[in-house]
Length: 292
Image (cartoon, rainbow, N blue to C red; front, side, top):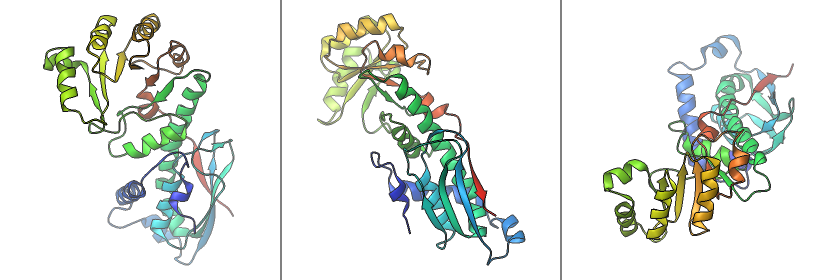
């Protein structure tokens, strides 16, 4: 029997604990107190079935480990044959999984499994399009913390399946000083001095700026590892790259779209972060078809 981890993107980590927790939470939400009363009422217990999880559009697949874990949680007798694994590109109509086993378990798992695959494949497919538009540049496309509450680890994993990179996972793994931190702390130098005094030697410090004047002030302190260039136009981004001259990593953010990403990458910035990768990705169209 294959395991959920065997279907993971080999170049991206997703904790088995995160998979189990997400599946448990989703099934608990769907099964409620009485279970799938439709399948219980209409399908005899001994009935078996074979189903195909099929892609109804082209794109990048993600979420198969969660679909498999959903099926296995409902019945240990479900057998799954995977035709691809996460991060694979698929064509419209391509078979992704072949599922055989107790019909009740398959039917009960259907919507939860498809929700996982549809949501995560949508993120992976959108990310892959952003990445494709920046080919030939050094820039990396990154996600943000604008994720579905409770699903951040899954959605950031899907970004990696699409060829993107992850920004910080939470408030605890990097220092990112925003405009409100600067305002409360009393300015750029004071906030950076406090951050540097507090940070451990492995903790990076990034600070957000809105103008080239603020960028010059940051550079004069030599206290930041990276600078987030917030909502700057293309001409200003190019000037920021010249001004920084490689002294800090530069990240462009704000208003990033599929139409603008190529031009932003051409300015020479090191990173672009886009909340749209996770908060605005359309659902990937897939289905579970019972074979007669």
